Image (tube, rainbow, N blue to C red):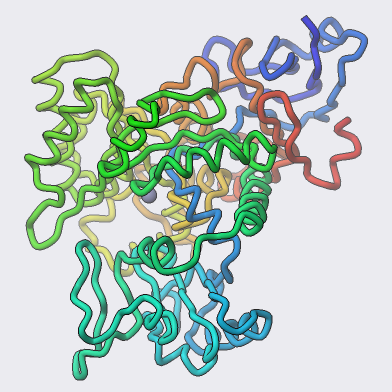
Amino acid sequence: MVVDFVLKNANVLTIDPQQPVAGTVAVSGERIFAVGSAEDADILTAPGTKTIDCQGMTLVPGFIDAHCHVFSFVRNQLSLDLGQVRSISDLRAALRKRVAETSPGQWVMGANYSDFHFAEKRHPTRWDIDEVTPDNPVVLAHRSLHACVLNSRALALAHITMETEEPAGGRIERDPETGEPTGVLIDMLGYVRYRVMPPMSDAELEQALRMANQHYVSCGITSLQDATITNEVRRWHIYRRFQEKGTLKSRIYLMTGVEQLPRFREAGLSFRAGDDRLRMGGLKIVLGEATGRLYPAQEDLDRYVLDCQRDGTQVAIHTVQPSTVSAALTAIERAQAAAPAPDRRHRMEHCAECPPGLFERLKRTGVIVANQPPFLYYSGERYLTQLPAETIPWLYRMRSFLDAGVTVAAGSDSPVVGNEPLTGICAAVTRQAADGRVIAPDERVTAMQALAMYTANAAYASFDERVKGSITPGKLADLVLLSEDPTQVPPERIREIKVVMTMVGGEIVFTFPPCATFLL
Ligand SMILES: [Zn+2]
């Protein structure tokens, strides 16, 4: 057995209860060969072994983002980032600059704007942006991805006029006096991006994927669980192609929705097909509630879940309000009663507002909660301003789920909010929003619990606990070296810890430049 790397002088937090801390990790090929004490470094080193002196820094398993939207994040790389823009007049200035760098007729894309953070406290309209973008179609994506704004040229290309009827599942916002579309479209971003805009060229796709990859590895994300209902077979092949080219280093677990699931099956891609780089995930269902009605209706939901329960496919149900959490549990309970089977590991995505009465049902059904600690940081201010006070203690619970014996996996919902796992870990431990206010402090977890949510628990949520999620001999060598120990620094400083090195499958894919020279 050839040991390729010995990482020595490390403060290793293995997230493996069998051996929680260590000093040395040896890597052979793409796997962890041995985990030992500081003294074991010399024994494991052989001629040809590269030694990485970690200088006492902290080594943890590669972070797993248990809920994100990879293609949207990739697409956003080519967009003007509006995340820091604080008014519509600043937005106009940013667009004017972008347009000056863009050829006439070319689409201009913006992303991450937040009406909540605009001084005007409203979405921009086409009339706000037309004047600065006369020669280019423009689409601006709201950071939630549930709204977007088109200028008049883009509306014309989309054939959206006063006469256009409301599309299924979407909404065209109109001026109340004239009935003219304002440019604001609700739940139509996918339609605009994939039906109206020309597809990204291969060169654009490669550039965007390269940028996305650089971001992922620079914040220590070695695995991504993609919960996008519109994932299609074509994306599987895109990820595969760019992983093989080496452009995309992170591993992907690809979920899909009810419409696309049969296409994957026809292509021979049933649940868990693929390999450790790219694996087929389960069925993602977005369960919503409006004016007292569920979408999809309970009977349809029951049928989707039962079909999956029968054929061994995991379901991942998006739930926000208590009524949807309860309806999702009902569907899972019914499916389990009708077709008992061990270990289906159905998931609840977000489970955003959960009253205590539902804990027992979560526990009994073995449902995994995939929630998003970064929301607390990035959206906490909005929650505290807009949500009823009695809802706040139910929001993005962590501690009470763990105490009730429910597995919690952490993700970001990126690009809805930032995906840096250390920001998420910090938020899970402090429950602090960006403005410093605290949301439901009783739900604070320890740094070690938060690390487990981003590693071992997230691996469990994709049935991958045998191959990743902890620093254990035989598992994939997905490792992250951190400048400081998240369990030792003051909790509010966890966010400032630097990722110094990221390794995926025994390959060093990122080093923090100032440290790169002494790593090897
Ligand atoms: Zn999502």
